[in-house]
Length: 197
Image 1 (spheres, rainbow, N blue to C red):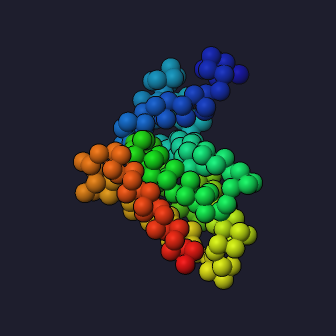
Image 2: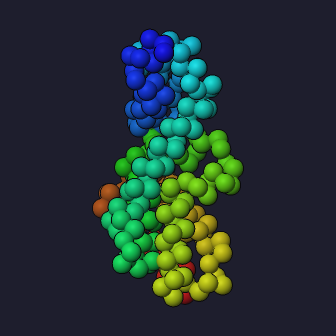
């Protein structure tokens, strides 16, 4: 076992943690393998033994961020077996927007810097699975006709993502947070009404 591995216990995990710190406020541009190595106290060569490139560590950081985002998306209902699908979808949509507004650096990493656009990777991401679960519950509850279920996730995702973008970088960026969240609630409710119509 190398001295660095012994010293850090789990060097890849320490590197991802450092990547999370760097990107929290700086977004994807703040991440560098050399800076991560410096922060965890190893040589860049030691870092490269665990992550072959900056893109590899960025992907690992992105996966951690997506898991944190999924937790935020479902925490108010905790995927309760008693919650209706519409309640879950509302939680997922508002959680997505709240995460984007609270963690803009991480949001940028998760949705603009991740290089793996393989459909299987996207479809197994925690945030995507939370959305799918809510929509499938809506079908089971009878709120979303089964014959209209296909592709609905993309309609929902594009609406909340678009709202998050205009709230972060567009015309809503200078508005009061409470006002923005009220508009977010109206947006999510409009999406749910449209899906259920």
